[in-house]
Image (cartoon, rainbow, N blue to C red; front, side, top):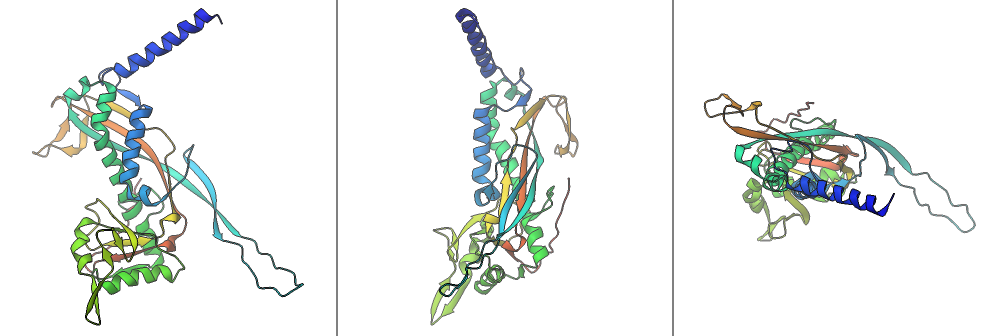
Length: 318
């Protein structure tokens, strides 16, 4: 290939890139979100998702990933002089993590389509990210509308690692004891903002001195990192504790999107109860989808404190 032809190809490629960067929402109504916007959205999701903040990331290049983990390591033995040292084999288990598609539809005013594509996604980024991380956390932690075979709620239910009662000094320790009895060292608590008052009041008087397990300034319960879950589906008075090294997640594919001007949205209604009709109401809707995987490799790694009046149900849907 001549130098002139190579230069012509480079110019054509550059022109296509410039054109793509300057198109509006009207001109590019579907496709993959470009790397820069995708990274910003994923960064927002990963910073705010409690699962992604506390769990361990597993690289995924397809819908499924198989990996091994140490269920039990090799042992050591006392030996006398000249005696043979015994050998033991570590126990390895293989698990499969499967990704599920997570989608969100966001209706916006029609004027958004006049934005350049990069500006459009810059405006939509926080809305897309919030919808993704809230839905993922509710599924993986609370078991609400959960497409996965596992959730923290399911693990604590299956293992019987649930303490029922108010947020008190003794009940917090009882939740930790559920984990210590299984040789699990908790590294995080999941709470919610509405629990702050109860946590501050969870004290024990010893020798006339009030002792507290909650340190709001450092965000810890009994010296263990504590994060707040943003979900109306988590009842006030609920706490989860666990070793989140045993929770894995992955993101195998890019984020895809499609923009529609004429759909009728069945899951969103107007004030009068009628479904939102984009064409009639001169609106547009962005549908964004991403794939996420979730795997809990040790059910006994989690425990829960739930209020007395709470009836726990685990919901699993496709």
